[in-house]
Image (tube, rainbow, N blue to C red):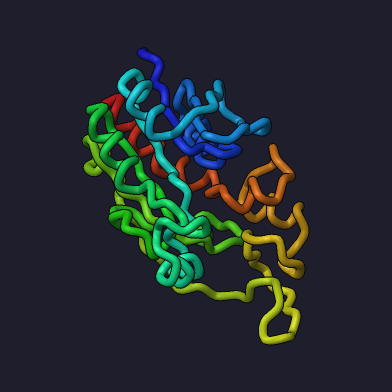
Length: 228
């Protein structure tokens, strides 16, 4: 059987990478503009994600992209509205360029981002669907043939409280908010268990990742499509 490989662009520590590994892909390599000493994949190359997709993407069987999401979060949108994209604090939107780069490769691709982003909602995933103790909704846009391979899931209504401060009161819940540096959101070990990520204990790496269960689900369907 031919070995199948995934390129994980904007990989950070490799939350998406681990999912594709668990799905059964033979090799998953990462690209990120910043050093990633805890990257969990087979190989890591430090370089611009868009350039990496265009240069190396055609040699992979699947391209996954998780461009920085700060531009799309509700808080940043409110800030950028008053700053304009030329200001230092404004975030750059890389979703469009990443999509264009992936299309240019002719390969199947997956584009992931947060709620509120311009990513098309072909698949929407939540941690509760996989029994994880984190909500962490993410949109997945699929292209290059992958859009015919992955079914969306039914999003059940949430039940349960998130650990943390609410209006000056600290609550202990069964779910965790894995983001930011503020206290009261659980320990690093809580975050690791909630996300299903045991290879890094660095908070910003955990907070920037997606749970591997998400791309394991997507990867299993795409792998089946590619091999059939």
